[in-house]
Image (cartoon, rainbow, N blue to C red; front, side, top):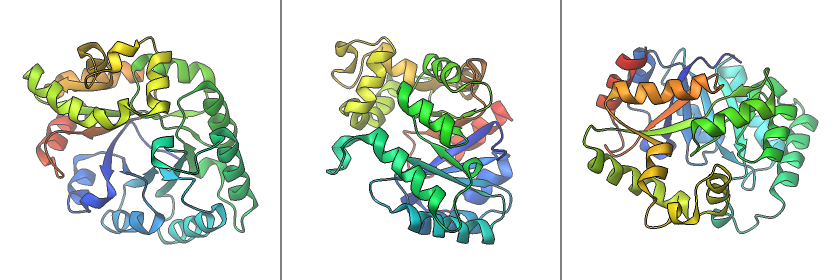
Length: 272
């Protein structure tokens, strides 16, 4: 599927009021975040006419693949070419059943393939951080949608999945030129992730130390995973991911509430 170069990540519970403007600004893909169901995705498709809408991500521990495939078929029939199924295992702190995540993802792909009708490989994408999950994402889906990563991870992911798979990282950002204020917003956003096993392990693989994860994250870590500054500076951070091998970057403005329209406008002006 053609997901374009620049997208926006939006928590489903924040509603769809800003969707028409996101579309009008020229973003190509809207990632509906915070483990949405397919029923929660449909209103985002209804409020837009050209946006590709993706789940970022549907949690595989909370859904059965046959039901997901049936929901996928309904959405793709109603909105042809405009829905991308993003799936992932989430993190163990949020799911009591979390065991053998790689096997769970493989089994979920098997279920999507066995459903009637199946979910085509090119209409699904997987959240992947570590090498084995990246391999699986490239083998069984359109590619990977990693979260809370750096341009270095994008480079590693591209090398791992090869030239044909899609690499579409999410990038949290704070449109704020006061660095300390911006880091405060960034730490508030990042706090829940730095205490999770999968995200902390990913950051350690990227060369950060245990002390970087403490006290809300070191300046070095926060500056690497949450772009901040002017919209122009954030655009530079986006291009660092593109230069490292990303096909698409999904922007998540944080720190300015549930409807950061001024941030969307500034970022669109800088990027588009």
